[in-house]
Length: 302
Image 1 (spheres, rainbow, N blue to C red):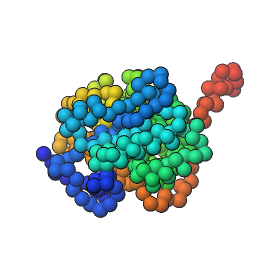
Image 2 (cartoon, rainbow, N blue to C red):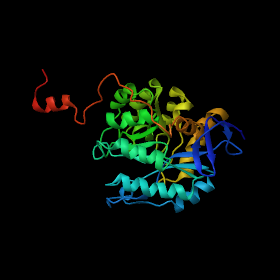
Image 3 (tube, one colour):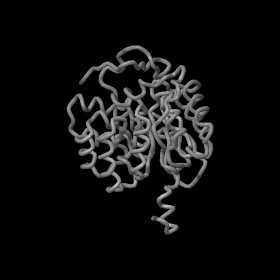
Image 4 (tube, rainbow, N blue to C red):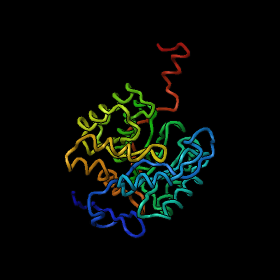
């Protein structure tokens, strides 16, 4: 087994914090970068109703998963949902790290406030957003840029805008889960692998990927430093999702990166004190409604 050192990350008695160089686990850590926790209020499915961790923790322990990144299920009020996740993280700080869920549309104008409270008050180390709620906005990206927070953003197969926000915000590490499509959209996943390979600040996770050969191709083309182990727990079995990573038959160094080194590297960049000054981007992110699509519908494409 490989013993290793985590740069500028300390997983101490009060949980994960930014500090000096230190050794963490006896062997390289296994960190699940994608797990939901807490209560939703939509009541349309598990994704917006409840994300209980009892079975997840039992399964993760059996699979020898050391730590887990937690964020809320879908909610109509992410301030409340993030507070619930913070309580869960605080109860087991050596096991969990929290990311702040934000709604790009409903939280417009207060994303900075929500994230600042999550970082300073809850010690969260990332942002979660979902295309189901709305397309990623400049506001969300700019806040992530100032705090150096990684952003886990489920694009739901909407791959093309990644070119825009990844290019506009090169200092932000974007993690696009499921190779770009939990719905197993082969075309979207293949298109995403090209984006993953070309943009140094674009990453992916392994959660929910069913076409194993695409996962193999993603590691081969983009490199193991761009791929993070994730389960999309508690609804997917963390042990089953972890088995896919082991089946990749990576070198020891590549396995170290995918299983935990990559996610720890990304959160090591987070500023927990004062955010950096705003970094003016060079252009515009895509609008929520593509103006070209609107012109096509109106029959005005000349």
